Image (cartoon, rainbow, N blue to C red):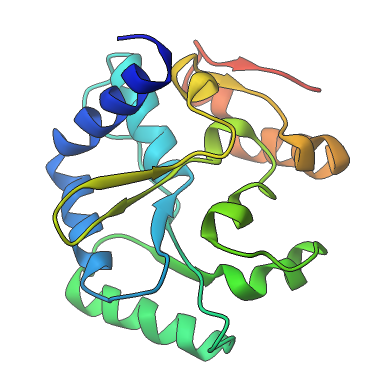
Amino acid sequence: MSGPAGQLADLQAILRADAWSMARLRAVRALGLPDWAIGAGFVRGLVWDRLTGRAGRTALPDIDVLYFDPADLRAEAEARHEAVLAAADPGPPWSVKNQARMHLRNGDPPYRSTAHALTSWLETPTCVAVRLEPDDALTVLAPYGLDDLFALRVAPTPAGQRKLGQYRERLARKEWARTWPLAEIRDA
C-alpha cells in the first residue's frame, strides 16, 4: 500500500504481527494513564527491522512510554509507573515520562497533549507513537506523518532544525546508519 492510509494500515499490521510489541502495549494500557502512547525506537526500530528483512528485533535501550497528566507533574509518579511496569514485565527497560512537564526539560513552551509533545522531538521517524485502545484499536500519533519512517529516512523536524546541534549529537550517538545501513540520514 502507498499513501498515508496505506502506511497507517501497514504500521498497524506490523505492530499486530509482533507479539512482543503487542504485549508491551497491553502492559502499558493496563496502567490507565491519560493520553498515553509508546513511541520512538519502539515503533521506528520494529518498522525498520521489518523493512530491511532483519530477523528478530533490534535491542532497545528503553521503551519510551509517554502520557499527559497536568494534574500530577511529580517525577515520583513517573517512577511509580516504571516500577509497576517493571514488576509486571521485568524484561524491557521502561522509561515513563509525563509530557505535561517535559517542556521544562526541553526549554519549550508547555505542551498541550502527548501528540503536541511529539512535535518537539528532533527527528521525523522518531516522532511516531502508538496506543492500544480499550477496544484493541491501534491509535497512531504521527505529527509529521509516516513517510520518513517507511522510507528509512531520518530528517530534522522543525524542532530539530531549531536545535541542529542537538539533532546532530543524537545522530552521532544513536548510530542508526550503522544499525540500518539502508537508512538515509539527512543533516538538515
